[in-house]
Image 1 (cartoon, rainbow, N blue to C red):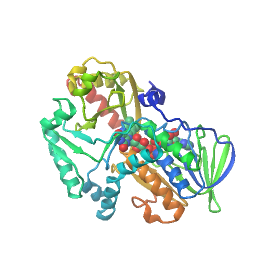
Image 2: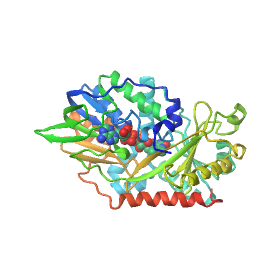
Image 3: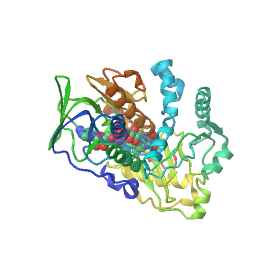
Length: 424
Ligand SMILES: Cc1cc2nc3c(=O)[nH]c(=O)nc-3n(C[C@H](O)[C@H](O)[C@H](O)COP(=O)(O)OP(=O)(O)OC[C@H]3O[C@@H](n4cnc5c(N)ncnc54)[C@H](O)[C@@H]3O)c2cc1C
């Protein structure tokens, strides 16, 4: 299986189809954005809303990258809990980021409502589930840290968690009522539509092939056109294509794949995730499960589906489905797809400062809220010249040694774990 977006459930069920065309000729704008996922589309929308002229170019289709392939969990923070963020960023910057991201679901669901985005929004919270009793101390630690900054999270015991999930395979859970689920590709394409409606120019099938900076302005070249702009946002994250004149910051590529059942019967839906929370577990090689609007169970785990060991991952996912939901043993997973998560060594997103621009990347598997927020704030910071609007301090250089090797380490680890037949 290739990394083609069309194999995904989200592609099959997407209700948002923004008008798109290829960039031809030369355009001059205030802001040029490269990349049409959450970060780029959100930046374009914000820039247009505050009166700037903006042009976004996407190499493939809007939502081609992580934004069209993810699990759709709209979290109220990062993978790291607040104290761990503070250890890496310092207390002031860490607290400010955690507070901002705590409100990111409000931003996402607010945009969905304001722009009428068709993306199956459900805001019933998420459950970080203990896969075994050994997972409970980490959930307790996360609960303590989140409650200390005022987050309304709640630790559920085994019986409560089992009733919410509809599974005896969970041993407790951390419930976050601020969070929820969406149809991820629908949200990305809805943001693109909203940006177009607000007056932004968006072009797909228009890869930036080269960028240049001269005389205080940017020149971005595509195969059939070019853009001149004062400001630049690079929002290509884990799907960055080569551009002459620019070297994308290194990330650790971690792959994650998913499959979806056919719509479950009403009787099954009454037992499995009856409250429609989105879930993931505390296992070292984690997995996730959630429902879509038609009552399909979408289950996922770490791994890529484009190499010789894909079958190992796929077989393991079928076993995981049966272990968590025994009544679904043997149920076929109809769509299967995977995507590339852009991790950083610190598990924190980064904003890299350029002369007259920013690169935003490395959401480390938590990009729906953060990407949407970062895109907005970066656009506003550039256009107003007020860098204090940035959600975290910008860095001037990023390096990550042996990034490819680290990615291979994650993939090998997932493959070996999935190879062990009784390890679920
Ligand atoms: C499988 C998976 C599951 C995930 N689950 C979750 C989740 O449940 N919750 C959550 O919050 N986050 C999740 N994430 C992370 C989240 O999807 C990403 O952090 C987020 O989508 C990043 O958005 P983005 O706009 O920065 O980048 P992307 O969505 O990756 O967009 C980058 C875009 O740039 C384009 N591009 C690249 N190079 C060029 C170029 N030269 N010219 C023009 N365009 C270019 C690409 O084609 C792509 O469309 C998951 C990620 C994956 C892969």
